[in-house]
Amino acid sequence: DTGVSQNPRHKITKRGQNVTFRCDPISEHNRLYWYRQTLGQGPEFLTYFQNEAQLEKSRLLSDRFSAERPKGSFSTLEIQRTEQGDSAMYLCASSLEVRTEAFFGQGTRLTVV
Amino acid sequence: GIQVEQSPPDLILQEGANSTLRCNFSDSVNNLQWFHQNPWGQLINLFYIPSGTKQNGRLSATTVATERYSLLYISSSQTTDSGVYFCAVEGGGSNYKLTFGKGTLLTVNP
Image 1 (cartoon, rainbow over the protein chains, first blue to last red):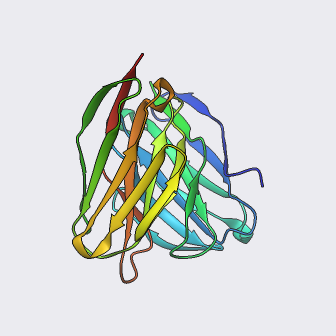
Image 2: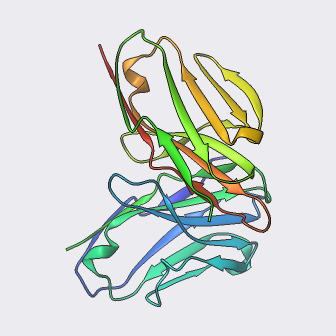
Image 3: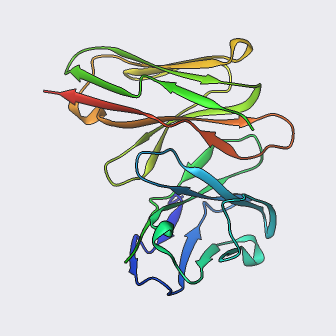
């Protein structure tokens, strides 16, 4: 068990470019979550998956954001036409099932210049 | 949605001191976790404690679900305890996501 893995760890991009982040959950964990954290705040929920099904999306997830979890394994989070306000830490978490302990990855820090 | 309030927002201690961090939540919960965020941003699991009391070394936690609060105790603090401590709760019903408080920034001075 290597824990939740996220790549890349850091990403600097120019405004207007598209970026994609990857999350590999703990094996056998059915639930996968994406959160966003800005400076001085706690993480805020973006979306979550039960296996390959995306079950809930936050209003924070604008049309420029899309997440997938093909085959219920790894997940990707894509941001199109990035804006400076998208600069944040993007955190991925997984849990075995509902109502069980969630574990977080190291996060991807995005800077939009 | 469920509200989570943590106090104090900031705490400065001398090495060796004890401290208590508090987490209040506005509704019944099915899950409560305490995390320590390290300087690189990773959330480290401290406790999964929807109710009751748990201890792990110098750290212990108590959740009184009926009164909607949880406490994290740090004894004999060390400089490595510095960082942000977050409480996160998963509400009842079909609310399957964690809602975080704003955290407590702990600074332990040598």
